[in-house]
Image (cartoon, rainbow, N blue to C red; front, side, top):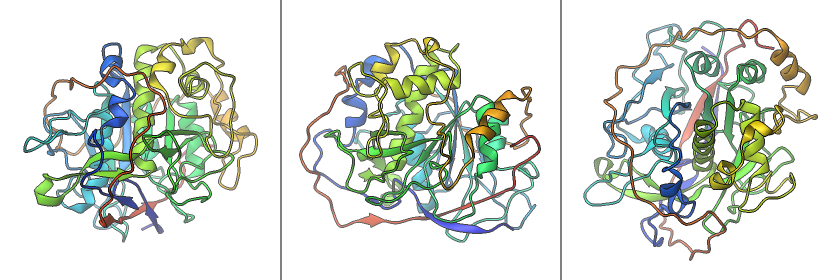
Length: 411
């Protein structure tokens, strides 16, 4: 049984759920970035995104019928059989929201519009890495001596979404895992604390990982956005439509937090990688950093905005194979949490290893469904919007992550 640490995550993690006040019903992240038009060019097909998160409810209206492999890594006792990775109670709200932002169909319920995914053609593999605030022992199906991150990449993930953060010293993903994951050609995307002025924390603070903070419809960072010299990018995260567990999963609200912004960024990267499959992971990241905002610009970075606001349309306009094969989110100063740049580059220089999947998907996955349609062809930009009418409903979830030592070959 490993050490556990409470963390605040997104959607309903230090996130406010709102009943009304947004004329777009929380779909501005989709409409204002022109996703309907973008999906005529790319939907993320051919790219697998691993989502490391809470339990998932795959039978909600916006996910029902989709093929979502889901793997449990929690057990009743260390080394025991994996517990179900799906749930229908409040513990499933966070992961369900994250997966919906990536591949949601927008089906909705009771005549209400649903959540539309940014990369509906991508493949999502969900990993349940926490059950509640007490943590969970590691299941027998997790490769001995590694973390879920290592297993996710062995299972074929090209992008790993980690919409959480932790102030503790124990994590499901450790600094020792990062060099090998990056060397395997994966892109790692992590959330940032939803506390104004807070320092970045793992996994987003790990060197080489894209850390994401949230903006609202006006294009400005949220009041709760963290800052730091290693902040990666900004992305839509305030006032996003989210399905809650209220009324037996029939009520939508709005959320605010870096978790939604992290999912948006992962999905955006999948769209670009799907269109430019010959690009390396580093070149896709170069495109992310160089093509923020709506206009061409020099590569710039600061502690409040990172490289800028994620812009899918702008990225798609530029062939990433023309960019250097270097990770722009790998810093000379590794910061408090590491790993060092030298460790990452050394791992990349090692002969490529071929991982074999060792975690068996939970049989809760359902049949595939067709891609969603609709949306707006408006180009992405800074969109003005009225203040949201927040109700006094704040759902706080303590999510537990755990650390497993890095396996052989991980620097």
